[in-house]
Image (cartoon, rainbow, N blue to C red):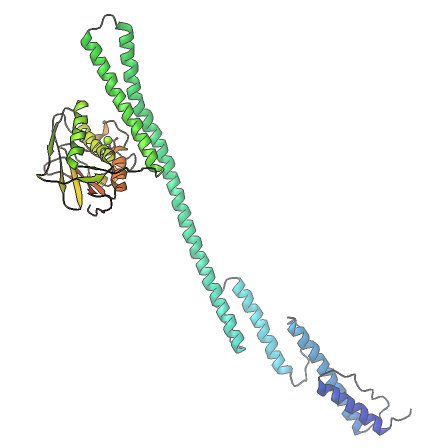
Length: 387
Ligand SMILES: Nc1ncnc2c1ncn2[C@@H]1O[C@H](COP(=O)(O)OP(=O)(O)O)[C@@H](O)[C@H]1O
Ligand SMILES: [Mg+2]
C-alpha cells in the first residue's frame, strides 16, 4: 500500500478543521492510507469529534422539533447541559399536560423569561376558568330564575282560569235563573218581583262588566301599554265624581268625605285616578259590615296629594299587606274567604298610581279596619317620594 505524502495529509486535516470552524459538518478523514504515527492519531480524534459533532447536531435538530426521547450523545462536552435541557423540557411537557387536566398550581422555574411567560399563562388560564365557572353559575342562576318565573306565570294562569271560571259562573247562574222565572211566569208575576229580578240581572251584569274591565286593564298593564292622559282637575272633583258613581251602585254603607279646608288643582290622568278611588271604595264596601262608615279624605302639600280610604272592615293581616297589591292575590282568612273577587283591583290600582310616579299602601286603622292611602304628585313633572 502506498503511503500518502505528508503535505496531502496536512491539507486534508486543515480542510476538515476549517469546515468545522465555519459551522458545517465535514466528511470524516479517510485514514486508511495514513502512516501509523501521531498525525493518524490526531486525525482519528478529529474523526471522533466529527461524529459527536454530527450526532449532536441531529440531536439538537430533533429537540427543536419537539422530539424529547432521543438519546443524548455521550462523552461529549455538551452532553450534560443537553441532558439537563432535555429533562427540563420533559418536565415542562408533563406540567403542561397537568395544567390541561386542570391543575393550575403548576409553576415553571427555569429559562427566566420563558418561566415568567408560562407561569403567567397558567395564571391567566386559571383566571379564565374561574371567570367561566362564575359566568356559568350566574347564567344557571338566571335560567333558574327565568324558569321559576315561567313556572309561576303558568301557575298564575291556571289560578286565573279557575278564578275566572268560578266568577263567571255567578252572573251566568243569575241570568239563567231569572230568565227562566221571567219566561215561565211572566204573565202571573207581580210588578215588584219582575223589578227585583231585573235589578238582580242588572247587578250581575255590573259584576260581569267589572271582571271584564279588570281583565282588559290587566292585559294592558302587562303589555306595558298604560298611557296616561294628563289634564287639570282637583282632588275634590275626583272624589265627588267617584262618590256620585257610588250612589248609583246602591252601596249601603255610610260614605263620608272629609276634605281639607284648602287645596289646589292637580295635573293627573283623572279617569285613571278615579278608577283607583273606585277600586278602594269598592273594596271598602265589599269587605266591611253593611252600614258601617267609610271615610274618604285627602291631604295636600305643595308637592303631592295623598288620598285616604278608611273602613271598619276586618283589616288585612300584616303578612298580606304588601302582597294584596300583587296580581290575583287574595287574603285567605275566614273573614275574607267567602267574598267573591278575582284579586286584580289593587294590582290595577297600584299600576295606575306607579305610572303617575306615586305610591300606595295599606295600614291598620286605629280601632279596627284598614286605611288605604296613595300619593301622587300635584304636577306632571314632580315626583312623589313618600310611602
Ligand atoms: N278594604 C279591605 N279590607 C279588607 N281586605 C281587603 C280590603 N281591600 C282588599 N282586601 C283584600 O285584598 C285582596 C285583594 O283585593 P283586590 O285586588 O281588590 O281583589 P278582589 O277584591 O277582586 O279580591 C282582597 O281579596 C281582600 O282579601
Ligand atoms: Mg277588589
